[in-house]
Length: 441
Image (tube, rainbow, N blue to C red; front, side, top):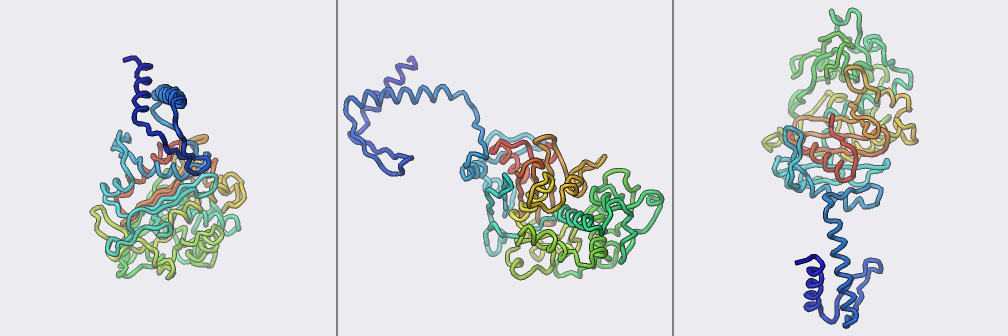
């Protein structure tokens, strides 16, 4: 049957089932309109039906629809993201069939997740999925706190740059010159080259101790100096220089603890209190803290962490006295505020957290490494700064395009959160028609 005959027959068939009165919803007026249909109108309706089907057939060759985040359709785009998660295989390829966030959470055994998406320097949506506590079945809300893990490092680095701006720290000075309560032991690697603040933040200091496992809440918690020096109650190796400073990148959480001590020694303030004053209060990050115990109002908002088998971390979560490296409790919305402020600083816009020169320094690529205090990827419009994090029972990711105030923060309360983070980031990039946002994509 020819296409034209098909449409005419279809239209005539429709006439047989159309009642004398049809109900049409007028989307502009927002109210119901009743229209009586006579024979003359039927012929007009036939033409209309043919026109609709013709237009539809002309557009049927298009496989995908691109969305522009400036079209004020954020609500619908959010819904598209939530229902169009594609599994990513080990080769980085996406599956052909979409599933929902909740379905993927169940597959990966991820109890809870919090997402904040921002554009034009504003959070356009933030939402929690799943539960923060399996025992109580409490749901993840927008104000639920997660451990930011290694995303603590960019916050500590911005704090360092604030002290650089105050003249209290020099980026390229031997940190031992201003450390008071402990010194980095000298060895063959430090004969000519020294550990500096900038090298610590870019992970080129030569310091070892890549990360920390945290402590059970019932355990004895070591002091910062005990973490650095090592002790009977410390579960990590002493922090020492194990290769020539400046030689190459060597990821070091231990280096960030040296930086934490430097911050405290030169400022005369404890690290949690100083970050609150310099970062959290100005940016209105009301649900963020490096303190332990947490303030009572925040303690009630924390999520439990869960291992790869779905078992709760003993005590609910671990304590990290290594605050600058891994000790931040926060929300996805608060971290989004931090990422927005750092981007504003880089672009020289008002409402930033650093001077423009400091932010530019942070986002300059260090030879054989990333940025100074945060990871960087991409070029041009795709140039972005980011950091991932993983503590016992928690996994998270934060990324922002440096030349425009857009990006995403994702926080999960599971050791299995990493692949889900990747899949959600890719779904957001596709839905909003943004460049890739995952590490090194």
